[in-house]
Length: 498
Ligand code: 6YU
Image: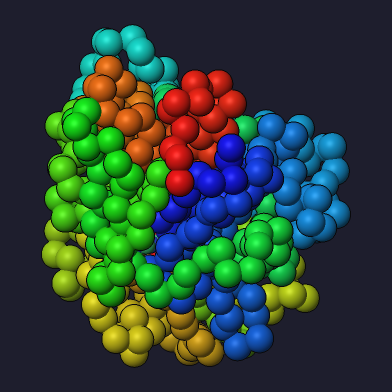
């Protein structure tokens, strides 16, 4: 039975670990994970800044409520703060917009009031909501979210803000640029001009007020790994090529060729490598090559960069109740989310900071967010160059020339060779079908070749929770279940005999 079935999982992120857990619990004893790096967790990566716990990768449980398996596991393992467990917290329907207290600073060194830019904030929220409503309507007025928001802002501003003086009006448009940049971070996209409008509503938000792991997101990984047999993961073992078969003649197993030359024979392989890695390496990773429809979806789907810059201070320059710091460039062209001169002005893409709370735990620590090509360029700079840019930025926006960071640390997801970016989004021209194509196993149904040789899991294969940890986890379970049900329903003759 299941005992003899040989399953190799490529990648030890949350999707790979979830798949292994489900398979082992279902009686598959011959499961192993091949992981390129020396650690498990992938884009769940907890680090330290001094003695403070920081998240280099995934930050929040998005929508922590009963329907979220990450929330349920974290609760079961005792990894959450009591507030996150309350029914009120779980029931909060934020629609993805957190009820945060913001401090707003402008490039002329002024601290603005929230009300100063509330016309912009209200309009932006409204348009973001409307952007999700073109789903399956085949009637979206523009190809991308960026075009839609820009054009609607211009039209509605002309009507609604006609009584505002020109400086106030101009400030609203600059504030919207900052909001566009924030939305680039959320979507993991260079620009909203690259995010498709027709499928924007495909992403679903669960109820619950987003929460963090006080001891680090990796606690989830540690607990899940503890349930797996020792030695199941081989570290520092990158996979170079998967030799599968799309013909009837060659009904044999899949051969997994590792970079060190080792060849491992498997009945089934579950691939969980990031979309960014697939975009770069699909042609060498699959032999024979992927079917065209799958390849095209890999190329069409978006996978951008979102990085964090952690900055620690001796004393706060924000209010005690502040959760987020928003930066508004007043001298920029209005309604832009891309910086014209990346090398000189990359820092303008950083939309603001989130404040680490509570201060008893984190001290005076903020996390800056920067997406896109500007973020990828930032990764090439030295730590001193980044620190200098951040210092100048904060001095300018606060008007306080003596603020000096104590420590700075940034993530570099684009240059991570096993990720090549941060997470996926539905780019212009994408639809649900692309995600369907992503998750489709090889060989395709209808071919006479042995079924389910190569299966696909990972964040970028979930229909509505792509780009998240819970999405990735669910895809690992989904592919494990696919194999479980195959072996519980298939004819004995289909079972590999080894
Ligand atoms: C979430 C959050 N969060 C911030 C940042 C990042 C991400 N996410 P993995 O990559 O983990 O595993 C693959 C493994 O494969 C890996 O170990 C590789 O080393 C290995 N590998 C590669 N090649 C190999 C080879 N050849 N051989 C062997 N091994 C190989 N998610 O829920 N909350 O706050 C954030 C955030 C900076 C980078 C995030 C967040 C995304 C998750 O981290 C990510 O989805 C999963 O960890 C992926 O797991 P996996 O197993 O699939 O891959 C409207 C609309 C909007 C739509 N989007 C809105 C949602 C917002 C998303 N939020 C993200 C925000 C943050 C801040």
